[in-house]
Each structure stands twice: as C-alpha cells, then as structure tokens.
Amino acid sequence: MAEEIRKPPFDPKRKLMGARPGPGAAGPAGRGRFKKPFARRRVCRFCVDKMAYIDFKNVNLLRNFISDRGKMLSSRTTGVCATHQRGLRTAIKRARNVAMLPFSVV
Image (cartoon, rainbow, N blue to C red; front, side, top):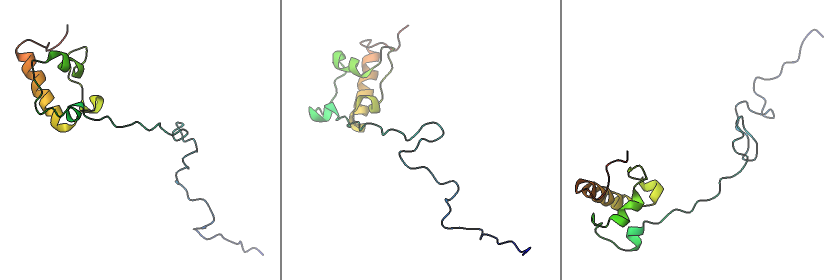
C-alpha cells in the first residue's frame, strides 16, 4: 500500500499548457474580446477615373495627398494603388521643385 499510483506524463484529457484561449476569451491585455469592424478597402481614385498621367500642375488634386506639414501621405492612408502612388510621388516632387507645393511648413 505504500505504492503510489502515478499519472502518465501526458494525459489527453488534461488541458494542454500554453494553449491559446478562444476568440471570446479575454487575454492578458484584453485582446480578443471584441472583433474589429470590417473596414472596406478603398479603391484607387485614379484607376476609377482612368487617369494615365497625374499632372504636377494640378495643385488642388495634389494637396489631397500631402499632410498639413507638407509630407506625402502613404498609399495605405489614401487608398491609391502602387502604380499611381509612384506617379503621385513624381508629380509632388515636380510641383515642389517649381515652387507650387511646399517642401515643408515651418
């Protein structure tokens, strides 16, 4: 009777250590409690208008793609595709060189 009954080292019925909680459970920082609302992907406005060339002289258009500090906004922020983001970058740089747009705001 001095014999002890030992459990096997792995018990399949026992919860595994290090397993992640389900999607409704609150983790250490409260993550996973609520689902993020589905954000609809923006469509490139240049593709919708079928613009082949972004004119650097159209300053009113270019002002929508720079911040109030004069920095270019990312394509993730504006929703512009990669092809038109490159054209937009060139147009903003050309407009800055001919003093239509500011390099920076002091």
